[in-house]
Image 1 (tube, rainbow, N blue to C red):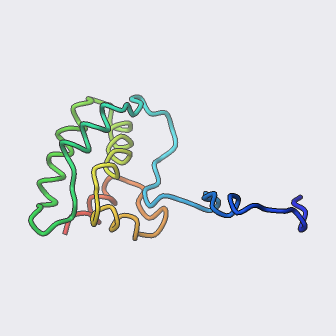
Image 2: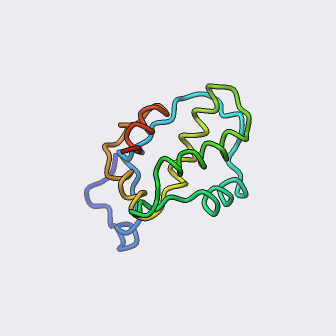
Length: 119
């Protein structure tokens, strides 16, 4: 139990709290066959980024994204988890802000994600 008279420093107030934080995308529990490696994330962010600009086609981004991620050749259950884990890393700027604006835990399947992403 925390004492009400505990002295807190300014540094304590600037430390971010993750209490009550939940991602928009809720990845199902279970084992993930392929761990996320730095080079995988780098390849995704440099070869398959979507910014949400008018000149970008969300359908084409989804096709490019699936071509890259499905190259891992995972079973169905792990393929969906990997897609959901990596998709949020493929979004930048406006597109990332869009995802963050959705309610926490509102996306729990790949179908949920693609339905919301595509116009």
